[in-house]
Length: 135
Image: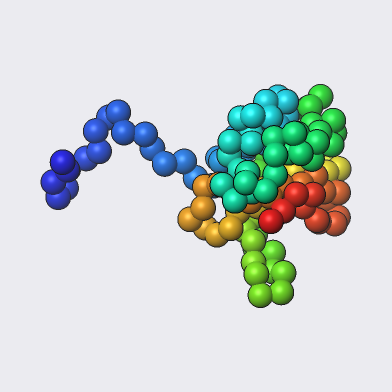
C-alpha cells in the first residue's frame, strides 16, 4: 500500500503515452509483426476485425514503408467528423526528413486523450487524409 507522498515501487510499470503507443503500433506493422500490432487495437475493433482482415489492411502500409522503417512524429491533432472527433498522430518516414512535405504519412487514431488502444490507422498522402481502417 502506498501512503501519501510515497513513491511508486521501482518495479511498477510506467504508463506510456499515446504517441509511444502509436509509434510502437506502427513499428510492429513495419516489422510485419501483425499479431503484436493487432494486440494494440481497441477491444471493439478486434471484435469486429479478424487478424487476417487486419493483416490485409496493414499490408499497404508495410509495402510502402518497410524499406525505411524509421519513423518520427510529424503532427498530432483532432479530426472532426460530424458530432464525433478522433485524436490522431501522424508519423513521417525518417527518410523523408529532408523533404518540405513528407511523401506519405502514417496515421494512428485514438478515441480520446485517455485511450491507449488504437482505434484506426492508415497510410495517407501528406496532402490528403483518410484512415484506411477506422471504427
